[in-house]
Structures are given as structure tokens and as C-alpha cells.
Length: 229
Image (tube, rainbow, N blue to C red; front, side):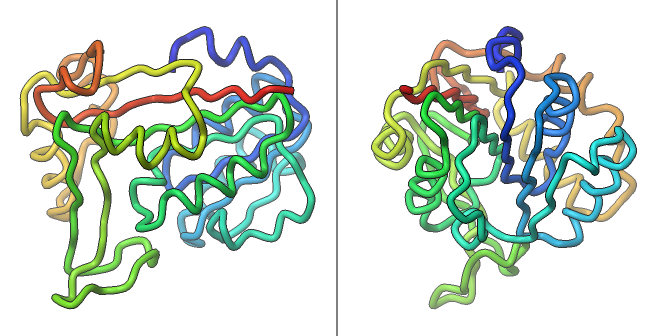
């Protein structure tokens, strides 16, 4: 996200975030911008409990609701939100377009949506032999959909077709193809993993690219959508 984006959003009254583990963007923004109230959605109840602990430490608990639900199933009534964030979520949904349509419905006129998605010059889907997030059902081979890497064509087909063109788009990716995958495998081995190293790693091993097509390997695309009043 460009450094100026949070400044443009200013102080917003209503904020919601659908996330699994990248909880610090919504919490830090809610604290810094003086958000009146934030709704934090996460279908993983155990992970949401960790978010509660961080909110209490900041302290923000009095200004937050914590909902253990997906965006499609959440009971948010007729609420509309000034800002919605979703950090690395929609790639894990088989029907990402349905969830994106619900996010679009929940945004107030003049609202802002910030989301990130994994990407690659040639998109592809990943499957696992277990359901990590309890979001999918096994296919005929007993595999579970895990995540989608968007290329330029699938981003337009699956995301822009629902939300329109983004106001801002930044592509950030690995310098060396395969680096991200090797690091992910290290996390999955169950060994002590040096999470403290990740900011340094991102600064040294990743860079900004002019487009998704320019990526040599895997990356992340950050998108900001602004909707008319």
C-alpha cells in the first residue's frame, strides 16, 4: 500500500476487516485514524481470539466487534462501512466473486476497499490434502482448494469484473523465483520459524514490479478501490 493511502482515508467512523492472520493493518489504522468502530471478521475462531488479545493491548476492545464468520455469512444487518480491508483472504475462496460482491454491497457511498492478493505472471491454483481454513470441500481426488495465484487476465475476470477498476495498484514480488515457496515450506515443517526476520527478508528479497506480467516468480498485488458518493 502506498504510504499516502492511509492519510487519504483520514478519520472514518465505520470500518470492517475480513482477515485470517494479517490483523495489524486494521488494528493500527483503527488506532491511528480514530475510527469510531471496527468490525473484525474471521472464520477461524482461534485466530480471531489472538486478534482480540492484540486489540485489548492497544487498547481498542471498546471500539471493536469480533465476528467468527466469513463475509458471506456474517450478520451485519443494514450496516454500511466507510473502509473495508481484506489482506490475503479472497485467494482462499473457491467462489471469490460471490464474496467480493458482498463486500461491494457493504461499502458505503464514498467508501474505500483495500485488498491484497497473491499473483504470478501465469496464474494457477494450489490444492492440499487437508482443509486448513475450513472453507472448502474435497474434490473427487480428496484434495482441498487452498489458494489462487492471480495473473493479469484472472484478476480482471474475477475481481475487476465485480469491483471495477482500482484507483491504485502496486505489485510486489520475489527477486528470485522460488524464494517465497521455499520460505513457506520452512514454515510448514513445524520447526521454530524466525518470524522476526520477515520484515528484513521482505526488504532484501522482494521488490516492486511495474506489472504482474513482469514478475519473475510469485508476488502480491495491493489494490485500492474507491466508490463514488
